[in-house]
Image (cartoon, rainbow, N blue to C red; front, side, top):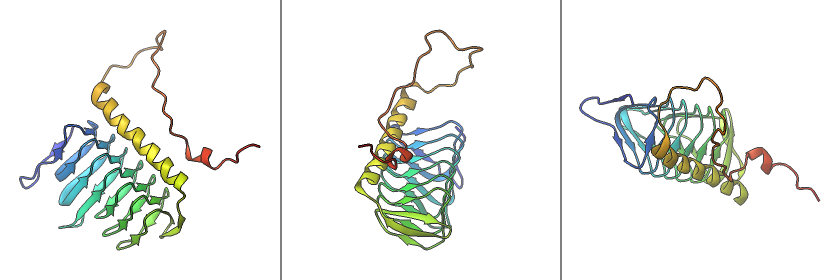
Length: 203
């Protein structure tokens, strides 16, 4: 993978973590146990430290960077959706940042909170734990239900399984010219799309 030292500071990747070969790590970056970093993510620890803690995931095309002397941190079981941008902020344990959301400098996202897709969180905001955060500029809309927090945990557990799957079986290959007979199938997972949670129950 593209992995670069700067000023003699070398990224650190725990052996139980998976970092995709197209992700870019620069400088003071710490990837913790069982963490996942997806394709084309950019983690630039050239101004401040970036820490991805145990079991957290940073998905495809995310950008993490820091203000000089500050730490950009994703806490244990944190979940950073595709294309999100984190700049010098702190994501606490079990929180989720939705796709293409932006968190600016010195934002603190409380434990088990969820930031909606495309939300923009201005610098310095402290967002409450276990709340749904929406909008631009973002605000706490309401407290999350236990069902929603459990749904988020299911999704994060699926990414933790993906980390193990990648360590066991991900490899670069030449594509096939046609679908082969008896093609293998991917494993099924119990996680449900969010939209299914919002459907009324019959009867």
